[in-house]
Image (tube, rainbow, N blue to C red; front, side, top):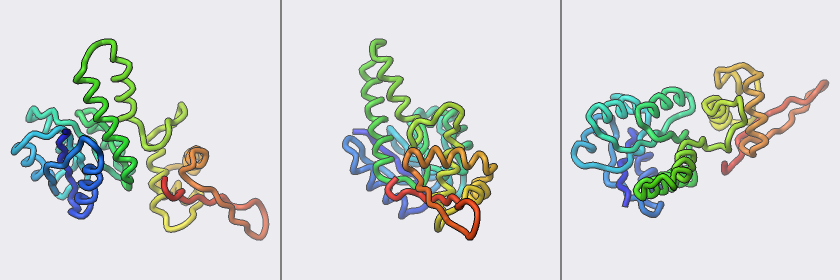
Length: 225
């Protein structure tokens, strides 16, 4: 059984994530924490295999927690939970030993995929042996993959996450220019990623016709992705 610590400052969200983890075979939540200090205290009280760690906490951020864990000698595995705008910071956490991150909002299927990949990786590493190196590499790839399908060469997962979040947070269809402004990037960059997300079924394209000229392209998040 893989013991999990769920860390989120929002008690309701922590309960939801706990319920999600409990639905995945082989995992159990042994504790919750709602601040960085409480999370570190829980780890001091008992060891866990994995921390599902929210980046935004009232006293410190998730990166600080990971750094402190490593400074104290704890090698507990960590999956960070973050908003798209914090992807760069969370990638820094990965350099300090976090396995990967999940971008909010995520659904049960997204979390289950990460947990199942993690469980398979643990089993593979426990077996050991050079002949299994290819399987180890494949499982690390599964954990490191973004929620979206693999990106083409020249595309950044962090930029794709920013565009996804801008569309997901919108109250209705937005133009590429509006999405670019919300995501803090150029219209050309936003347009390039929107086309990719449309091809992979994550966003829907609609056309708004005016009095004259070409129709305006408008983008909305595809329900269920």
